[in-house]
Length: 271
Image (cartoon, rainbow, N blue to C red; front, top):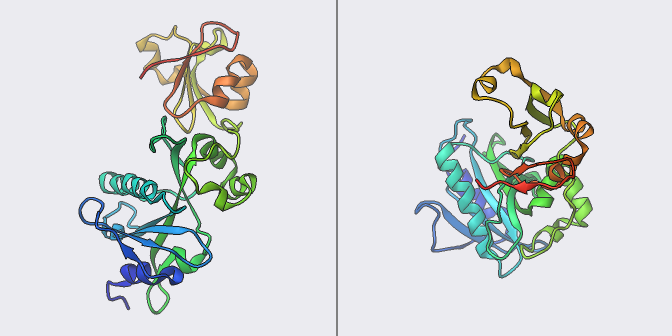
């Protein structure tokens, strides 16, 4: 049985701490509440995000952990994700960082948001009816630097926490990178033209999930013929053109590197 109050009740009761409601609402409708649980950091939560329709039908509230004084950073992250939910009718995927080409918090290196399990386990992460039926989730958002997001994308959230030293090492948004970016996974795809069999890449674009490469000799008609394209792995691409390894390791989503020779030097192209 459900009475329609399970999500607000879960937000109110969770973590054994009373919520402090903020006056500012996201989109004028979604309430933001602050909690200070014993044994954990300040946690900022939404109450009302679960009412937004999603194409998958999944219902979620959102949470962000912050150190005291950085509650505004949590509000920014919640706003970004709520706006995306409203515009695109999707919920943030667990374990797949959303990476931006530039920091979205002024004066910080934070440019990515990742959803992960919380430190509290299922009692916080799952919203259930009184008789135990699963209704939805509270999704905990992590605010990451680009290097941290790349590391988590390649090796997973647990590996990032282990490399950083603890989950608490990933709270202060003014921090430097806690890990080094590993670059794209070796089996990630590279979409390229068959002209690469005879000519080196000139422009390489990192989309955030894969690489796209052209030699600069492809005509529009050539590119429009799917028979002229193939897919390599990153490992194969770097083995064939080793001077691109620096760009592959350092590139941020949306960036395009232009190469004029095999020295390894590249210029980032403007959008």
